[in-house]
Image (cartoon, rainbow, N blue to C red; front, side, top):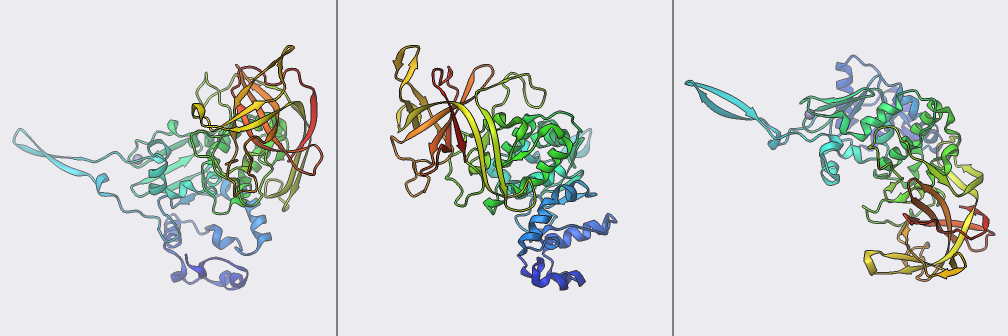
Length: 444
Ligand SMILES: [Zn+2]
């Protein structure tokens, strides 16, 4: 990191006059030289163009990201570079260098070159090798930069890769854009739409939740450009509600922590209400159609059990898609009471034992697998949930053909009818609460 080569309040005046070439880190120098060769005179670099220690400027510029990236002539991505000193241009690894093999055919020696197949973005790389080969793609901020840019050129260690709304290709020409979920989303994002499609947003949030943010509070700002694009392109999406959409609110509440990843603690600093996917640090999952493979059209249905009567969002800044300071949902739904049970049986860590559950007139003993949103048994956390704690279950929705989603909530002490989400029951065979009365609560 070159401390001189960022714009801060103190260096703004001098930076506006000139910045010595030597103070630029290698990636900036390479990028400036490459842009000049393309005949492009102007360049946007976040750390230079946003005053890094000015919160107001940062918030204003972060809100402009959608227009900055979507209107750029070309976005250059130092995809294989770990930081700003890595440079744009990579050195090819020995296994990817062509090796000549001599063949003798009719007394003529013919040399044929062969090399190992190059790795290509998501399609060929697992999580570990992607982090090593293409560290830039692991960063939370990069998703909207990739999706919003009209044209993006990735400088990887071995070759150049190209992404635009209609194509993604590479120098060795084996990259297959159809296999990349980003390429599909990019195409869909740049196609004008008249209806809102919660599936696109869900796939996008799933990808985003797998990326890393240096500052957890950037969770909304680093996605703000894409949220604004949704507002502009999909007028029916309604208001933005802490990473969810007013119009598809119940569908958007159906996220669960992805069971393929270890469950993490909650972020140390509050950044989102517990009903938002942004309240957890783990990768999340939304229901996905089973009969049709993504991408495509979806012919499935939601049966909503709850009604959202009000939503309140207090913004931290001016941007309606940026950081928030407080949020609440007023919902009405059927509820029942259960106990959290720590367990080791059937490889299930937590069960919920329901209290006073009836089938017709008969009381039944009912247990459900419980997927917490965070490490509820972490004693050092303020969110610790003791074994045997009482929770409230509220049926949320049924996703056809027969998956049920039930919110698991914990009462906020000292506040009337106010609850926090702590997890979800998924895949129960029958609707959980059939005889219970409706209850109006506030979710925070
Ligand atoms: Zn290639």
